[in-house]
Image (cartoon, rainbow, N blue to C red; front, side, top):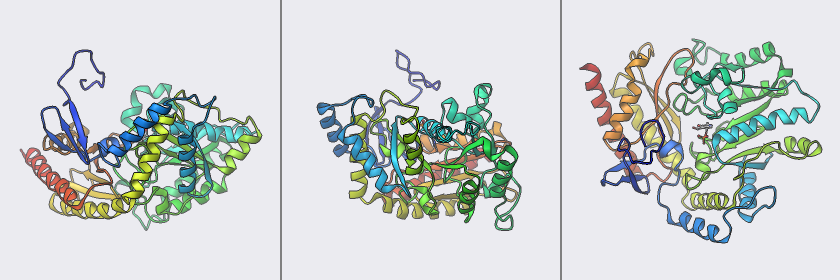
Length: 445
Ligand code: PLP
């Protein structure tokens, strides 16, 4: 495969050919070892090569790998849905299974609109989101995403959904400062709702901690409480997109648990299967399902592979493994260690402007002028350079730039598997330190 992402019939050497994975490490066919410091795309939460999961997949494939969701349900799918209902906040008791995070947010969009249609309200067709956000690559999901780089070529095909400023204190889009701002970004949400008309808005979608579009941006205290109050006041559903932040990644099972908020819909993906099989989910509240049940009775969406028993069995095994290994707690503890180490690097390198995050979802933002938080020019591709230097040094980190509307940021994510040990955290920090040193030499030369 070359950088186009297309796999050619004749193998190309642009990317290393992966041979196998074990724990937080990946090995290519030439014997090079890489630390998976980003869990792939923040996905491989339990690490690579876990035999227990492979065994469950094998046993389930022998029994029955696939049934169509409109013909049958299956024990693994029922078990997984029940498990999610017991773990998710509030009355999020109904799960619609899909195959990717993008499908999960597309489904959330449709469920929100359908919920109002079933009640005879046909004007609520817009989904509000935030300027700096990523909710998926398909057209509906991208319409809700403030990810400039991924949108720009397809802008004419996208729905004209409104967006509001993100709670991004380090580069406040409103050029204000917390706490003096008194959460102006939340006030902007209310202002936008009044301007567009609440009768036109079905839902507000947000990543509890902004991931791919900004690099682990954690909102200031009080933000979500205020957001929930505003959305409830105007009868607008809240969709917590936990595709990246869910399943223990941030040191709690769901990132929204840090604020004790109960959304109406939650989307999950990535860590749900930890990469062992494609699987994602849209989890919906009793209130919404009761309305849909009284109306058309079915959620107007679905995919061939939705709720397939093979993926469901793998997800159940992943969750059991997480519980046995106490991985949510490990994410909290190792995340603190990682963030403390990153803060030391922030002190050491002037171009490391800001480090942030929760649990094992950490971000590091590179800037040209730390005093004024001024970014590098986009053409300098400083973030990409750091990623490439780290890769050559055997550490994989993840890009989180190109998402900012109006200005660019060079943020990266450091998000190793939740099994990471203290020793491995220090190994990651050591390579990152060396790589930042290399980047600095490059910047001054
Ligand atoms: N939502 C969020 C918050 C994500 O981070 C992503 C992917 O990075 C998606 C949705 C889309 O998920 P997928 O790539 O599985 O379609």
